[in-house]
Image 1 (spheres, one colour):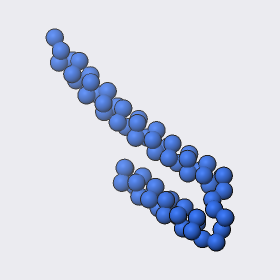
Image 2 (tube, rainbow, N blue to C red):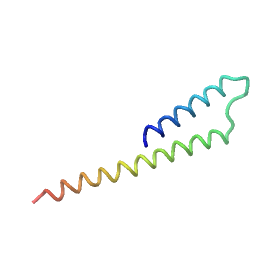
Image 3 (cartoon, rainbow, N blue to C red):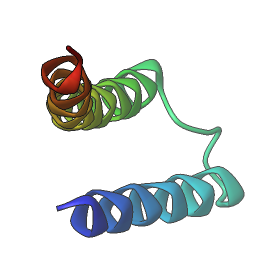
Image 4 (cartoon, rainbow, N blue to C red):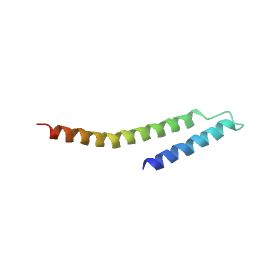
Length: 66
């Protein structure tokens, strides 16, 4: 799951770099907005996944306490 997200981000980064290096003026505000939205979605996904695992780890510790 994380490999696919990382690959997607790498492809988008490469695409953005190619656009900025071309004859165009650069990315528009809409493209930047989409990039920020994608990054935010990845962060939410990672936090949701890791948050559940961390909560389980803490619960295991709490359950082991007398």
